Amino acid sequence: MCRICGSFATRATGQELAAVSGRQRHGGPDAHGVARGPGWSLGCNRLAVTGPTGGGQPYRLASAPGIVAVLNGEIYNHRQLRARMAALGHAFPDDCDGTVIPALYAEHGPGFVELLDGMFAIALVDLRPDEPRLLLAVDDHGMKTLYYHAAADGGVRFASELPALLAFPQVPAEHRDEALDEYLTTRTCLGRQTALRGIRTLPPGATALATRGGGLRVHRRTPHRSSRGSLGARDALRREVRRLVQADVPVCAITSGGLDSGLVTALAAEHVNETQAPPLHTFHLTYRGEWPGSEHGFARAIARRSGTVHHQVEADPAEFADLLPRTVWHLGQPNADPITLSTYALFRAVRNEGFTVALTGDGADELFAGYDRVRTALAAPPGTGWVAPYVASLAAVPSALRESLYSSDYRAFLADRGTAEQRIAGRLSSAAGDRHAVLSSFETFQRLPAYHLRRLDHLSMAWAVEARLPFLQPSITGLAARLPVPLKTGKRALHEAAQGLLPEAVIRRPKQPFLLPVEAMLVRGTPLMALAQDVLTAGTHLDPRLSPHGLRALFTAHLRRPTGTSAMALWALVVHELWRQELRALRPAQTRASAAPVLAGAAA
Image 1 (cartoon, rainbow, N blue to C red):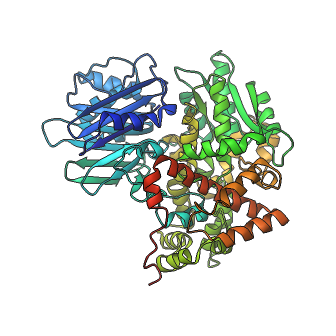
Image 2: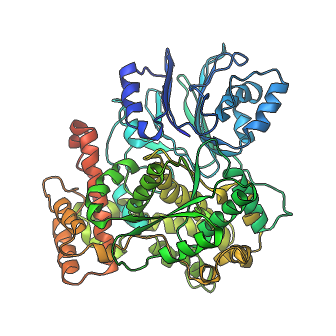
Image 3: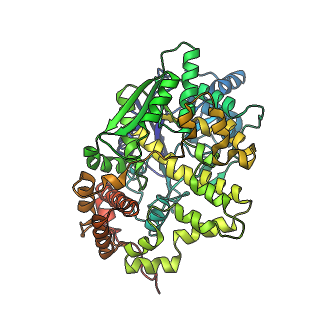
């Protein structure tokens, strides 16, 4: 697990590469490596997980001359691939998973990515006598993010984190006009787009190729799903957990108190107990004091049932106003989910206790239709119009309130260009396939990577912790694809798998997201409210797409009578404005020049 960066078809100085690497060194504190030549560069900050005594990056092999590669992630089938490459004459200096990449590329070309089982973002430069080229690739679900900027002159620059990419002085830091509406409509920017113009992420399951003068061409691979259908949900998940719990560094599990992480915890503990290894450690985050929605009782019950060493991490709400700006910086762009702050605090505790790898239950809700909004959409009778209520359920701020918060110029701009709500509803309405297939595709390949996986990746790696996701392994995604719709809807298959493994109270409890109780915390006299008032009333730097009058009205209504809707709206706006402050600090001259959205002619 690492942080990677580089450039192609353009020059990058050693000073520039040092600045880029410096901004993401928190995710790779164990080693630093750079390779560069005329028109190309590759860099890596390494978090040593597999083969920690070896694994120097960038990777080069004597048996694959002219091929240089860097890897962020884990290749779980690297031992099998290494044996196949060794049989073809390749020799490897160590047992690190990424060392096999140059050999795989030498034998299979860009198609080698299809052989990989794991989570990864890869950058590879082929410098052999034919035309030099760059390959970028990410795993099928986008578990490891790769940001890139393709310039008009053909130059490509990339990094694992957005603030790091902006350390290349040639990469612009310009606000994308539509992004504010997208963010308040869906809680983040979905798909390949980011909040900045010209900066994108590789979509899930993508391979991109660039040649000098030829630009960057991105194509999507066919998702890798296991066709083996003999295992049920419990046995398939058991196999994946047992694979992922193995590492050359200490491993723990995140136990929220819900079904998904509970299953991962129980199966990991089962394996540890059978192998007579030291007990599994589990981590659960709660908040100091009494707050609604606490799940710590359920998490303790799972830990007791599984025989783990349980860590109940009590975050102090008094420090949240200080933690939030740091959380926003690590995210790189706005994400309105309040659990971002909780996630940051949780992985801080995991790292402080000496753990480098953590298993989580992320991905189960998307694969097994666990969200209430999906079940409601699936249950809507034909002809009743399920799309509009579903899209509305994604929002951080409801449509009518969003409109009252926008400036008149921005409302005119959206009237001319169309709103994010309209675009998403249009895509869902026109998508091919039955309702379940349309929803599953959107949740899995649009919302999951942008909203959940980027958050998990960035905030775990902020503390140099590798998060592993058993539910997103090919055998589980293949199983979910094969199951009849009634069996996977509402995670019925997982409820059945949990029988005898988890306490009945956990199996029977309604779905509850891992949450931060913002309605209770964002009230008069709290540090978070003081931060909100400070950030959102600084008129000189307020986003010109927002209406000062609309913000004042929101504050007045919330202080008079706090509601979940107004608290969530304030939270989302605070996160957005903190992000703009961080962006100004990163690139002050450029972001001042581009602070106003390019709305000229929007209403013409």
